[in-house]
Amino acid sequence: MLQPHDSPEHGHTPGEVAARIAAPPGRGVLGDVVYGAIDGSVTTFAIVAGVAGAGLSPFIVLALGFANVLADGFSMAVGNYSATKAQADNLARIREIEHRHIDRYPDGERLEAREILRRKGLTGRVLEAATDAVTADRETWIALMVEGEYGLGEVDPHPVRAAMATFAAFLCAGLVPLLPFVLLGEEAFRVSAILTLCVFFAIGALKSRWALTPWWRSGGETLAIGGTAAALAYAVGLLFQM
Image (spheres, rainbow, N blue to C red):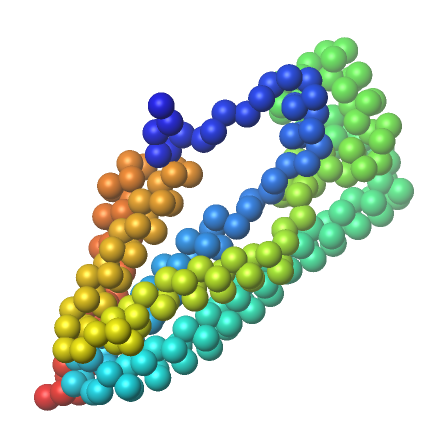
């Protein structure tokens, strides 16, 4: 049975291996989703807690909360787009540098490729044959240099996909603290707090699906971080009520 931190098994037939290696998934959007969801929950509930702590009306809670979900969510998405695009631009710049260096300093670049392969455990005639094979194809050569010399993955980041994942996660998680103020009356804040804490725990537990940390520990860590931020915001709100 799969445990929460186990990855699904993939096939190892020649065709499956060739297809999988030919199209590596890259970093995916897991980090973008977790980042957006946690920030959406924390910042929106921080506003809810602060306003509620100050004793202001539910209308103000909703107005500020929805404004935060849209404005801050969009801001985070744009920021993540810019950061991811910067990574893609840097990768393109490094590829261009390697193209230029191979043209100008082929012997030195060949030595670099040979050293990278040597550090991967190749020796003797196998090392020389592998170096010849890699440097015979320019794109393969550059891919080796990007990974071995700069420590970067060869798969291009996807700025638009990262931005959309961040915004969607922020929106979904950020709306949770606001729903009780739309549907309920006096108990709205209490229910909002409970639902938000559940979201914190769920995000952490889900995150453990791609980690070695047990789901309950990952959920508890995220719950503690989010709960601390919410408590601080509520305490600030109480100061304005005094």
